[in-house]
Each structure stands twice: as structure tokens, then as C-alpha cells.
Picture (tube, rainbow, N blue to C red):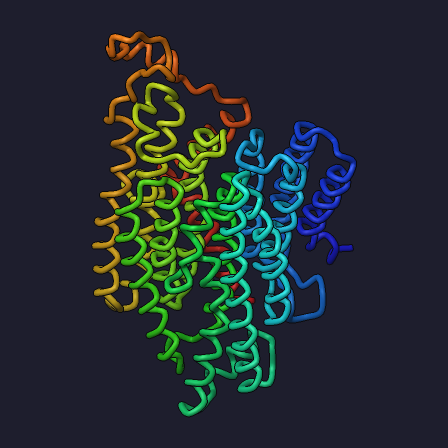
Length: 502
């Protein structure tokens, strides 16, 4: 019975997926299905929070580990699921005939991600990763613009299938060298191997990690991110851009924490450093040229994947804790602009910088979400983005000034990112609202521009209660983690220690 309770969050989310599937087959109204999905996702969050103290292995020893680390990440995944469903009250960007299936695929992907962060064996990891991926592939294809959605989904599936094949090949190389698929045994054998064998193991490990780099958006596995964000329904892009990052960072931390920083892993470390630098640089430089908000967030994801790798490169408890902390605070920070995307794109269109002109007059809450989200992603204090980058940089520098130049490059990239984040804020607060025309409000044929008050009245954005709840919750989480980061940081440190002791 105790083992069953350890698997409680996964069982709850699988039951929720089954319920939403059965309801979808009966063709109930979307409003009813959405209401039930909100209740089910809240139940998942409660069960996950109740299991925070769980510790053990509910299945065969060595393949699935439940500890404070996995449960903390599952709590973040469950919170992201609830947020994604809250913004799914109005799904204008989703094909009408497929709207009933949206909650089901969200729950299925969430189940795979929860299993992923507890996997401690290569094949278990691969099965969980594919379970989380299949739902995302389908979600990406549900855009009401059929052709655009199909092209996006096809590209996403092709990249995903290629990364899965590469990962399987990497697993075969690892097994060929170590004769085991248990991660702990692989790390133990790697520390004892001769220099002649370590290059092959490093290649196998890199190929194995390719699927995780794909999920995280690490260069050169990043090409799918801006296109998928742009072509997916807004709710699907929100889920992909938030929850999947927590799962990817979680399994990366679990794998890399097994390696001894002083052992023979120089080949892997050198490759990870290169991927880190390229991800930060390419992501930030490409984001500068974007006017579509979803594409901008896609390239921003690539840059933040590079920041997260910095903590992992420390190969220390502090570095792992910093990576976990950053992944968790990244969720509410990037959720803020995605909420605005869902609001402005209720007709199925993608918001651009020009369409957000004068947003502070049309919806003060949406403008605040953009301001807080962009400041957080840029790392401006007192947002949690600043604390997260501080912890990541400190973790690397803790090793006697190790990789000071890497921190310097990251700091330069963070400075570059200020340009395009502040460009979005400028469009919201400083760009004038578009003038009235014959299609926009009363007017007249004299060509005169309406007053600010008229423009405000005509173009005011009315938010549903679900959007308001999601917006205020996102702002509250950013404020809490920004002004009081110690609470979440202590949890992240405990999670990192749980991995070390496991």
C-alpha cells in the first residue's frame, strides 16, 4: 500500500486523463469538460503536494525513484498543468472539432513528465519520455489554421523522432561499454574506466542526452522551438514552453548528478560547455530580430536553456540546486507573457509587438503580466530571474573560480537580452494605441484620431474569471519567489541532497 501511495500523483493524473477521454467520447460541451478538467488538475496538485515527504522505490529496485527531488519537480509540473488548463477556458486558436481532446492530451503528457523525473534506468526513462512527447506532438497540430498547424506538427514530430532515434543509439553505446542500463551503475563504472574507454562512453552519453536537449531547446536541437511556438495553439505553446522545461531539467539533473566532477568526464564537460555558450548566444541574437511574440519567446527559451546548463556544469550539489531553482521559477516568469498571448490571440492570431501597442490602456492586468514576465526573464531585481541567475553563476564560481569566463559570457548574453525584453515592454507602455479607422470604432470621415479615452473604451480587453485567476496567481508566484527566494531555494537544496544521498 505504501508503494502505491508513492505513485499517487502519477495514478491521479492517469485517472484524470481517463475521465477526460471518456467525457470527450460522449461529446459533452467544452465548458463542462473544461470545468471538470480544472477540478481534476487541482486534485493532481493537492495529491502531489501531499506526497512531498514520500521516499522509496515503488517498483523494482533501481528503475524508479520517489524522493524529495522528484516530488518537488512533480509539484511544479502539476502547477503548470493547472495554469495551462486555466488559460484553456477560451480556445479560439484550437480547431473546433478537436477542442474536447485538448485536456486529455495535456493530462497524458503530464503523466509522462512525472514519470520522467523519477526514472533511474535508461529504458524506463525512454518510455516515460516518449509518453510525454506523444501528447505534445498532437497538441502542436491542433491549430485552427489547419495548414500551419500541420506543418508545425510535422516539423516537431520529425525533430522529435530523430532525437529519439539518436537517444536509442546512445543507449546502445552506453550498454555496450558498461553492460547495464541502471544509471547509478553506469556512473560508478564510468569513474573506474580507462581513458581509452571514456571517449566512447562520452559519445554515448551525449547521444543519449540528445532527446533531453531537444526538449529543453538546447542548440543545435533548438530549431523546432520558434516554429512550434508560433504554429501551435496558444494553450499548447503555453504547456510546451513551461511544463516540459521542468521535466527536461529534472532528468538532466538526475543523470549528471551521478558523475564525479573529478573523474574522467572531460569530454562530456567540454561538449556541454560548447552547447551552453552557443545556446545563450544564438538564442539571444535571434530573438532580437523577432516581432512575433511567440517566436520571440521561442528563441528566449533557447537562451534560457543555456543558462540552465551553467548550473549542471558545476557538477555539484549547489549547481544542481541552482538548476532546479531556475527551472521552477522559470515557470511563472514565462507563464506571464504566455497568458497575454492567450488573451490577445483568442481569435486564433499570433500577437505581435505592433498589436500590443497601448496594451496598458486596454488591459492593465495584461500589461502588468508583460512587465513582470519580461523583467523576470531578463533577470532584473527583485524578480526571481535575478536570484536564479545569481545562484547559477555562484555555483560555477564556487569551484575555486572554475569557468569564470563562462560566467562572463553568460553575463554578456544576459545584457544583450535586455534589448528585446525591454522592446516588448516599450511596445506595451510607450507605443501609442492604433488610431481609429472605419473598422475600429466611431469615426468619421474627417480622418481625425480619437481621444485616448475613446480608444481605451473601444479596445478594452475583458478577461474571464479564469484568466484573471491565472494572471494573479502568476504575478503572486513571481513576487513571492522574487522577494522571498529562500523558501524555494531551501527546497531546491534539499532536493539536490536527496539525489546525492540516493
